[in-house]
Image (cartoon, rainbow, N blue to C red):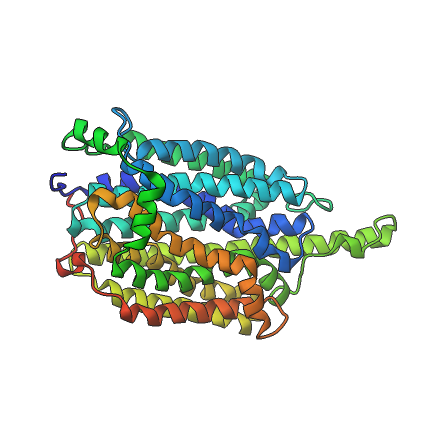
Length: 460
């Protein structure tokens, strides 16, 4: 492929805009799936295992989609955009129907569909940055993606609270998801599809230099064989970054699966009530359940809103980094180390919070880590990867995102936090320690090739 031309701010913005919808899906999933599971009767210790659908689908889907998108060329939609579109349609359907689940197995099934579909859209977006941008603009491109992700995280995390403020009830009977959550997920479904369509119809992709040769080489590929070959011959930079990613994503999976029970119990003193503990045939018992459930649902709204702050702070950090990276060399290793450490402090601080209004500061620090996790590893990796294999290598790199989540879901997070104590808030302490370990491991990562140049943004 010929050298890529430099792109303007708006060209990079449009090619990344679909991430707004993707993040609506992830934020609604991350902020409210545990609430849906608990509403349907799940015990808090069962939550990580119920979440296992998310990392398992990522492990299976991302390398395959990366491999296929490397070998795709459609005369109208190019290489990556067909996957954006397919994933967006499926994700929007799953988001809309998710809160109408009437049983745990149904909600878990929708989570499988939703996460697989999000991964179909998301993985090629990372490869598109490397496809479209010259090496000197890639850090800028990944940071701009993070800015859009931050906007999506903040808005989507506040949707149930906002819908409730507009008069839609956040209360419901036993085993029924409140209307405020249903409407929030419907809005998320619309935004997901609309934002991806904006990217699909405003962004062109560069065709292969020799289309006939490209198609011939693509036809000769062996999916399983090539993926296994790339696994065995990973660049050392990928393995070192993978270890950092392991501890980073273990921490965030812990937050997504257990922050709602941990914080509703420890900070708001409003745990999810167990319907089996109340005799609904007795009016006083039924009333007591309704009061306890209303307190839990209100606390869960506020936890979701507080979690949205990490999207807001990640957006602010990404904005600062984009201004800096547009003009100066960005030291990705130092940024990542400092960011993970601050995020770890944010998680550790939750144990000491008694006033719910203070949670926003903890999540603000976590947002600093989130901004870095979504951009710096990819900037550090992109210079060490063959451009022709960018899709499959980015997909394989994401194994280091899903493997820690699988480890956490299969009992790792429950076992780790119970070493400290039985309360769910100790899971947030585990998340904090995990992020700090990840930050320390950044020391072993090499400077990327892209850092040897000044990292510039797009001109206008």
